[in-house]
Amino acid sequence: MKKIINGKVYDTQTAKYLGYYTNNQTSDLDQVDIRLYVKRTGEYFICGEGGPRTRYAVYNGDQSYSSGWAITPLSYEQAQDWAAEHLDADEYIRIFGDPGEGEEGTEILSVSLPRDVAARIRRSAQQEGMTLSGYIAAKMSV
Image (cartoon, rainbow, N blue to C red; front, side, top):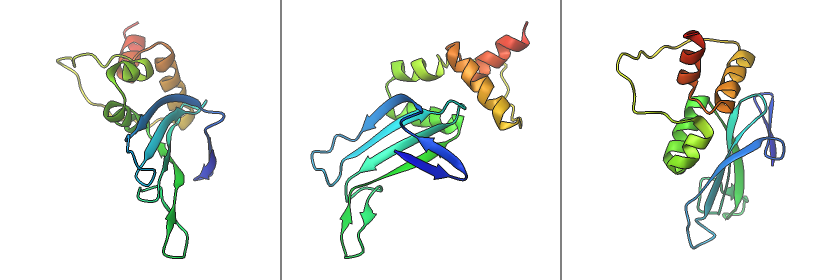
């Protein structure tokens, strides 16, 4: 599936598939299937499909609904939150690295970076199997 959102292409055929969630409903009317993807640029998104009684339903204009789908871009943090909620721990660690137990003496720091730089940092951290925080800390302690 492919969609252009805010001038960017989100395509499930070219993005890397990361994980899957289903609500395991027995009725097609209520079934929801959602897949997490990451683009080559490091941007995350979900592609969800669902039956006529789900948030993915499409109104037919004649007092009826049919199954539908949608693509939703996610920030890195939103993708982590989605994965923590919908995937098992091993899948989460495979995608984002081991979050550890949380360390004393840490500080939350918010920075603004050009999108391409942020995407390269996230991609490098993911390739090394590290969290974003762990990757930056490791690179800065050299």
